[in-house]
Image 1 (cartoon, rainbow, N blue to C red):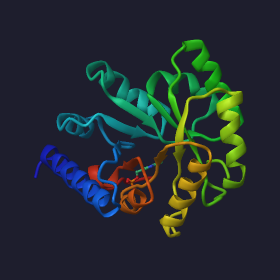
Image 2 (image 1 turned 45 degrees about the vertical axis):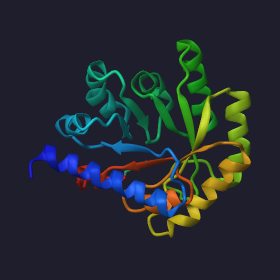
Image 3 (image 1 turned 120 degrees about the vertical axis):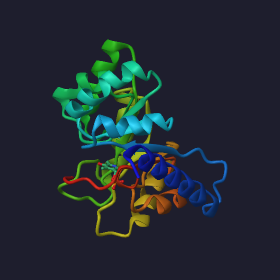
Length: 226
Ligand SMILES: *Cc1c(COP(=O)(O)O)cnc(C)c1O
């Protein structure tokens, strides 16, 4: 199979599996966003996904995203690009110019900087707060014990348009515990969107209320690094 039909086939399979997961979760009417994660992948592969009509994508590095996506966004005006990796404050301006949604708000310094840039541009982007549900040292995200206070600060003090929460469960753990925790924190804070579930666990995430799944490998094949 060539690259183009391979990618088209993968999209069909993943979309079917999402529909099946919705049925088993009793969430037939749920609208679940499929964010196609293209980190490390070439523009040639991305064009295959655009060709099957897909428009929602995720990248985790600002510079890589600018190089690949700024030209594509001129050509396809309805692309929605999600930032799903850590954001340094000195890259916020470039990130806001490149992405449509920021999923990784995780500390006051970043929230303050985003607020500043949103005010300057007058075009705030929808934001998710990343929760480090496993309290892992090497992972970014707010600790669950600090989540309620940080969410309230983002909304009230920084006035960010917070639409939901995002998490990446520890690889060695049963993911359902983390998805359930994320759903609980969102619910008690009145947030409705849950970005959770990747290639290996999106079915479980949908059972626990995911409104967005972020999938790379199952659509575009394995990556050589991270
Ligand atoms: C890479 C990545 C994904 C996609 O992971 P796959 O295992 O390739 O599906 C999802 N979310 C985040 C935050 C990522 O960095």
